[in-house]
Length: 381
Image (cartoon, rainbow, N blue to C red; front, side, top):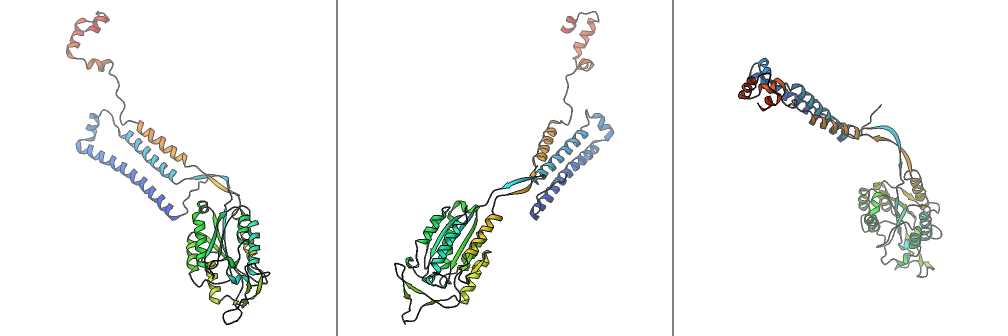
């Protein structure tokens, strides 16, 4: 029967070696004590003569007690190593998934290189994403110059409605503050007590670069929290005009700057590298929109596959822990060792030994009575 130990890591191997050395040192100490006792006896006198003065030789019992102590100590350290044997199975429950969707609501998301517009298409595909991941929890961050958040919930319809009701014109501060948005997403996950036990994903959907903060530094902090960031980059380096949309959502033409030139949006090389680095430092994926697609569907497919293959309930082969057996042996041996005395227990005196221990006066009195005396008289004597 093969026994397996959880000693794969070097620290555990060092602990095992230290335990073996302690057992060896303890056994050596007992042997050394026995040798010193023998030398002390030899120093006291001739061993053959000294042995005649002893009422009992306890060397054998001391040796037995020492062996029991050494075996008990070794069994205790063996139990500490958590031996495992016996192949079995265990059910591993499904791991929950927490996803915070961070969606860019800057006015450049009104661009129409993705029909009907970047923001409309993104909201529709995010709504589809949250519907197709049953069992996952979602949080929401809508951002431009400042982020607005919705806490983690299992109600996918509430997340879809939160994004659906907002428009880029509703953002109080313009811009593209990716770093602030990612930091708010980290805060959402950190504040939720259940999230620490779940797999955490941040999905960043944006068409621009952060010119204010340092989103890569925030991404490194997220990586330390074991949080992955998947980036969906909408739009590219080709200039795209930005429609002028009024408060009612109607397109009033194209936006123009103060000089009357059309305002366009394009992602710089530095911005593209920045988004790629955000995904890279957290082990996430970056998906770039192409052929009229935003790329959110690709992220959704990856998350569904992860929930189906990596996070789903499964049965694993396991070995039963049997540390209780060596631990029981150690306890039993310690009890037996404590019950064994080094010398036999004294017995009550009887027969000639008792007669020899009588006072001289009583012995003389019994001799005078003689053999014909009654038992009562002899007892009184």
